[in-house]
Image (tube, rainbow, N blue to C red; front, side, top):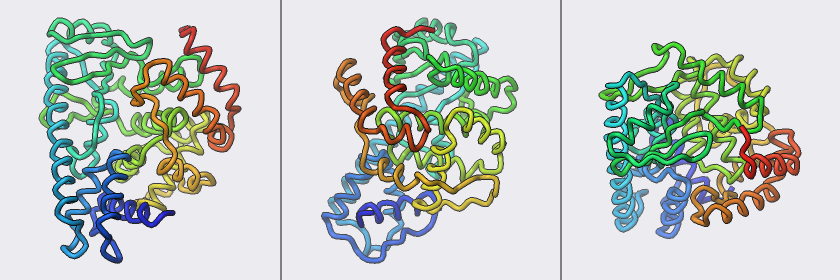
Length: 355
C-alpha cells in the first residue's frame, strides 16, 4: 500500500481506538496535503482531524494545512448541528401525532463515534414504523416540500434539511430474498423498548441486530454500484466496537449467507481489524476473508460516484452500466453472482419498476 495511505490509515486507527497517533517521522507539506485531500475524498476529514490534534508539535502539519483543516471541520460540525436540530424538530412534530421516528444511518450511526458531530452526514434517513403516508402528509402540513422518489422512499425538504422518509428500509425490488430481509428488519421494531432514544431528542436508534444487517446491506449496495468510501468501513468499525456483544451473530451470519452478503461482511470486518486496528473480543465475530485485500484496494482507489455524480438520470445510468463491467469481479468473487445476469435484471426493474 502506498506510504501516504498507510499514514492515513494510522491516523484513522488512532481515532477509532482513541490512542495516540503513531507516525514514525514527520511528513512533508506535500504529504500532509495528500492526507488532507484523501480525508475529504473518503468522507472522514473530521475523524482524522481528531487524531491529528493529538500529535506532538514536531509531527503536526504546517499552519496553513491546520487552519484549512480546522475551518472545514467547523463547517462539518455546524452542518451536523443544523441537521440534528431540524431532524429532532420534525421528530417532535411526528411524536405529537403518535409517530415514532427511527434514524437510519447518518446521525444514528454517529452516536457510536467519539465525537458524533464528526460523522459526516448527507440526507437524514428515517423510518416511521408503518406511518409513511401520515409522515409525508404531516410534513407537508407543516410547510415541507414532499416529493415521491419511487417505491422505496419520499424526499421531504424541511427548513434546509433533506429527509428520506423510507417506506422500506432497503431496496426490495425484484428480489424475494431482499423482501424477506425487509420483513426481518421491520420486525425489529415490533417491540418499541428495543429502540434507544437519542439523548435530548425524539429520535430513536434501531436495535443492534437491525443495524448489523442494515449497515452491511447498505454498504454492499453502494459497493456494487459505485464503490464505498472508508467512511462506510468506519461506520462498521465503530458499530462493532460498541455493539459486538449485543448482536445475535449466528442469526446475522445465517441471514448474510442467505442474501449472499457473508463474504462482504467478512471483508469489512477484516479491514477493520487489519487496517484500522480494531480490537474484537467476541469470538463469534468472523474476521477471516479471502477478498479483504481486493475490497480494501477498491475502497481506497476505485470508486466512481453515481448518486453524487451530478450527471443527471441518464448520465448516472451510464455510469452504473460502466461500473457493472469494471466491477464484474465483485459479483463473482464477493457475491458468487453472474454480473451480466445482474445487469440485465437491474436494467429490467429500473425501466419497468414493477412492484
